[in-house]
Length: 419
Image 1: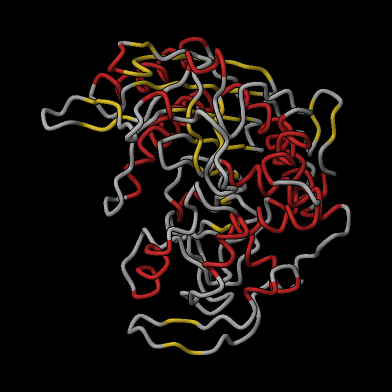
Image 2: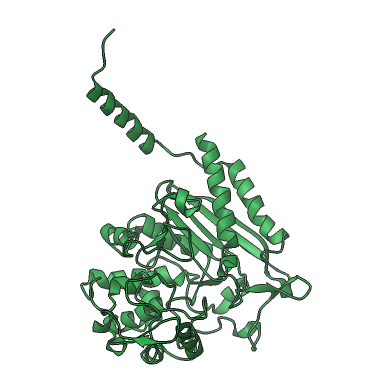
């Protein structure tokens, strides 16, 4: 019997493993999709959401587009596959792409101090949990701004002295402006020393101000002309005009009987998304459909190009979904080991993050329950819409019910296919 040389055996094993890694991945079947949709429909049946829309792309091909429930329970209006909803914080990656388009024009770099572009924010004090003010240890950088580690806060997810000051300032008041927001921010302290903690914050809104300053265009106009129009995201914008309003899905919350009812502003349905606000928040003002937003995601998955239109270079997109946080700093809203790139969260080892998708998946969600993720391992994109009102002071993770349900359902099906 011939002996196999150990080196040959090792090389053969590596070749087998490499082949396994590059072999075609299992595709979701019609049966899988039906099971996934049943689980998503259950959110409506169990009054977790008024209506739900689910879109799944695999290998660049749509394998599921499903709508169930109500877009407006008050008018008995059904949710549609092309319903338009508030995508809230899923505006942030769009703002991030706008920033990186200017990055490719050499208008800024990751190690630049923020104050180079926003001198009003130079020399801000830092307020500790006892309310004491101390100087900044050093200026915060653009890398930290885009990874929520520059020291800013939203003010609504905790109740420290710094959070209370920011909350009272109403930085993203839609009747203000990005210039007005920066003026308010210049009078407020940071919550953390730059680079020491991940804190969900108004950083994308600051980016919007920088986009205006570097491009010479209003933020909403830049996004519309440079991103939404080239990608043919025809139902996306900072208002929902004309006939598209017939497809508007409204945020809902339970009334005192537990029934889900629309949560309307003083002016009622007519004023919801009726016009572009003076301050179209770069961190949370975009309206869209799952199909439109999936085009944005597919552009990223393709390395910055879609249907012959290139917005970013492949290397720039890779940079966006590489960890930008200092060693030992992780995303507080997610499992241990989840990091953050440039306006995206990045999944780590599922064994530590307890998230369903594989390491390297990049994603984010919106406060009304919208979600997306881009999974480069399984060549899979998921985008979902519910409109579930979040009440300040409640657990923000309640807004992740649709994302978590979709993640569990999709990866349970994929894992079953592997075995």
